[in-house]
Image (cartoon, rainbow, N blue to C red; front, side, top):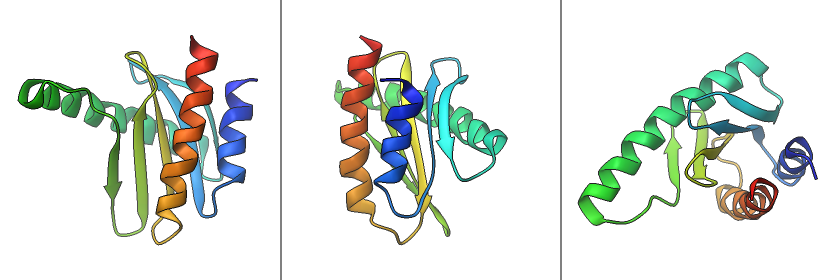
Length: 119
């Protein structure tokens, strides 16, 4: 199954989904699906990669653990950042107020499929 198919399934199962993108460790988009502009989704992915890398280092120093998930909520958008492995991560953006719990669940299912494709 291709990355685009996996991301498409995620978006189809998620009311209020704005976009999902797989990004590599350099901040480059690997694949994406969304209802927002492709360029905007790539910028979101790159910026969230910086946040992920900084928080990964902070968590590792402070707790000696690996970061599992980051949730960012703004006035209009909720964003999930989930590492796939050391080199890739998934960013999911959805409208604020939509089914956040379902988004976490669906993103976890998507993450498992991505791990199978990457390994």
